[in-house]
Image 1 (cartoon, rainbow, N blue to C red):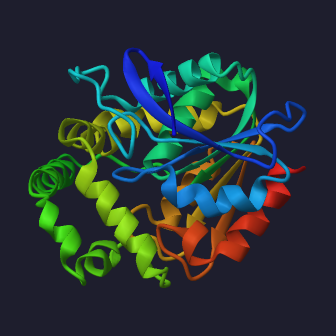
Image 2 (image 1 turned 90 degrees about the vertical axis):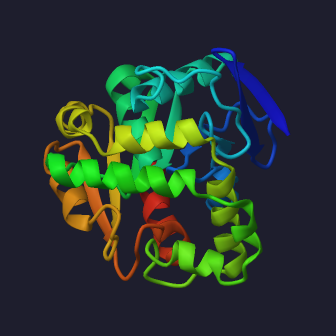
Amino acid sequence: MSYVSLNGVEHYYEWICTDEADNQRPTLVFLHGWGGSARYWENTANSLKHQFNCLLYDLRGFGRSKAATTITSESGKLESFADDLALLLDKLQLERVYICAHSMGASVALYFLERFSSRVHRAVLTCNGTFEYDKRAFEAFQRFGSYVVLFRPAWLEKIPLAPQLFMSRFLKKPIPYADKKVFLRDFLQADKDTAIATLKASVSKHATESMPQAFASVDVPTLLISGQYDKITPADLGRQAAELNNRIEYHEVAGTGHFPMLEDTATYESVINQFLLK
């Protein structure tokens, strides 16, 4: 297990590659979504390790990474996580990389592209998009989401059906029960303040204003992938975002929900392979 300090916060990271010392192979960085960790990217990284040195890390306050001691209005924004990624690349002496990101992690990657596009060859954004501001709906979502974060008894992990129920809204196709248990464990262990702050940042007036601008400003080849039946970020939102910029290609993975990389692994890996290796 490896850790690196970014702005005084210990971040967990790991390499998945055939030979970590092979500097000739490009680096592919994976970013996970809200409440999760880099664990669910491991299979994808293993399938790509012969073409890339795959770098997985847990975002601040999630998975095995520590949380900031104090969360301010700025450190709770998703843009601050993009700044974390820039610091991570500096610490690991990585000048330019490929990115594969999902859900909230794709928003972080989008802000990274906006701020540091010269450090990215190509990017894959999965289950992300633009949406319109709805004050009443957003406030209700934030209020309900905060309650869910605050009520996370550890004993939930010991109930056999809990992982199944927890993941039911996210999936259209089945994934292994062991993967569902990992998702529930990550959610239960996520830092409370970070989870609430990032949930509010992801569904906010600021996001509805800044993300369309960020999509429109993308200037590196980018692939936006949606799951056909995604209930969290509907495919229409991804399609609309891709239409903002001719540098963004769009692909919809049929029959999948919010985790196409797990629900239809073969299709997802084939699509990103073709794009990343162009």
